[in-house]
Amino acid sequence: MKKKYSQFDQYEDLHRLINSSDHVDIKVVEGSVTLREFISGCFSYHPKWMILLFKIRELLV
Image 1 (tube, rainbow, N blue to C red):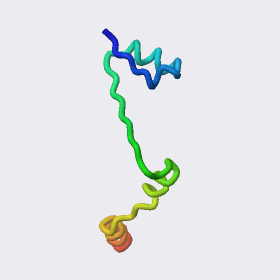
Image 2 (cartoon, rainbow, N blue to C red; image 1 turned 90 degrees about the vertical axis):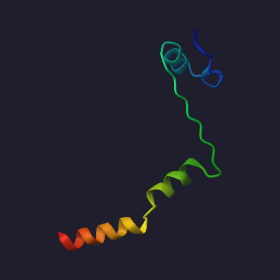
Image 3 (cartoon, rainbow, N blue to C red; image 1 turned 45 degrees about the horizontal axis):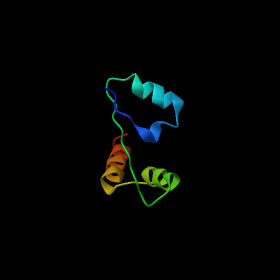
């Protein structure tokens, strides 16, 4: 018996793939920022330990 994923019914290709699959794993994430802000934050994340590693690499190379 196949489960019905109503939130994906509007997408025909996804609906076809979901119905023919053995396993479906759906992740949903909600946040207070837009996708653009989230991706920008990911790319601008520079923890101090990473900066230190690059400084050590600079000395070694």
